[in-house]
Amino acid sequence: MTRTLAADAADLTAGFDPTALLVGLALLIANGFFVAAEIALLAANRAQVEELASQGEPAAVRALKALREISITFSGAQLGITMCSLGLGAIAEPALASLFLVWLEPIGLTSTTASVIAFVVALSIVVFLHMVVGEMVPKNLALADAERLSMRVSRLFGWYVRLFRPLIVLLNGAANGVVRLTGVEPVAEIGLVHTPDELRMALRESLRSGLIAPGQVRVLSAVLALGDIDAESAMTPRIDLVTVAEDATVDEILGIAAASGHSRLPVHKTDLDHIIGVVHVKDILTARAEDIEGRTAADLRRPMPVVPESRDLDQLLNDMRSERSHLALVIDEYGGTAGVLTLEDILEELVGEIADEFDPTVLEPRDREGAWVVPGTMRRDELERLSGLELPEGETETVSGAISEALGRLPARGDRIEFEGWTLRVLTVDGRRAGQVEVVAPTP
Image (cartoon, rainbow, N blue to C red; front, side, top):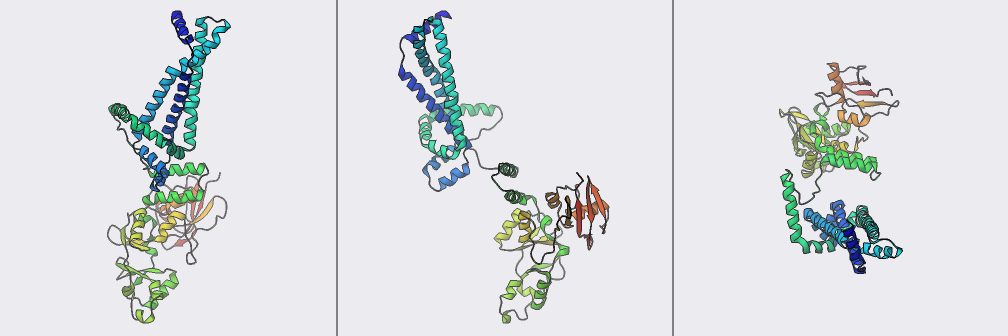
């Protein structure tokens, strides 16, 4: 060991080469460049890069190309980092050690002692600079402004990848082979596809960070949930439909519209199971008197889309937009009329209840903290969003149905049920269902 250190000391004192330190500095900067390129391309918002690329931004086009072959890109960055790290160890550390040895020998230290001290100090400085300047600083810069930095390094990094591409492809292929041996298929590109649950998680994190308002989170979450809600859950049920017979006159149609507040009225033949279209009051009001004289609802009806109860609202909204219809007839599995779904019903799933001057009050103010008055037709999930109460699983969709299931009979005024400290009390009855229901939360 002594002979080896003495020999090293002799080599080091042979002369200090400042060029080696300059080469080491260049390798340190290059290492930081490769780290910044790798982290920036990994953290960059690809949607923003794609948008800029679609606008013809050259730097964004180059960055997008790197993102589309992410496996090659990362392998190239790792190759660059490895070569720079090895170079620092082989060139910078001996050069720095020789400099310290020149300073230490005149103070009377033995060659062995001076060599050890110079080696330890030089290695410490090189490792420190490599970690801080070559790794942590470029990493933090890349995370702070990933999109801009990814585009700034794209040109030089692209030249590097083209120059060393054969070696990069060889190393990347070897790495992918090892990965496949573990039963995992390597990916060549990071896609933008996210599941609804991942998007909901992103919304929650954005809300927590204050980047998005609570109201926007509710609307966007409702949009993601449209595919989970079927037509049966959101429709106006058959029992609440306001319709006109096919032989109804213009005056009769206007009278029913004025009494109900509906501007679109389904038209039926013999009964509600034979709806043949919808009549729009606007068609009557904008027509000349002589054009509609003696005409009936059957003459004035428009076509009406027909969908099954299981049709989800996401698909149904697209159907209604493509057919330019504000109403859709919902039929059950036997082909009978289950209800009617309007565009307003779908919008209410997104923004909550939309009340106009013809709508009855469906939600009364809470008469005290922790108490709500809700309509019996409110769905289970809507009640949960409003109050936090998750009703027990059952075959019914509405609050009134849940009460009927719990009672084992039709609800009556004054009926009450309790569930995990919650109390539901029937305030009014609307036909054979609960009209208004008071929901009281457990006492803290």
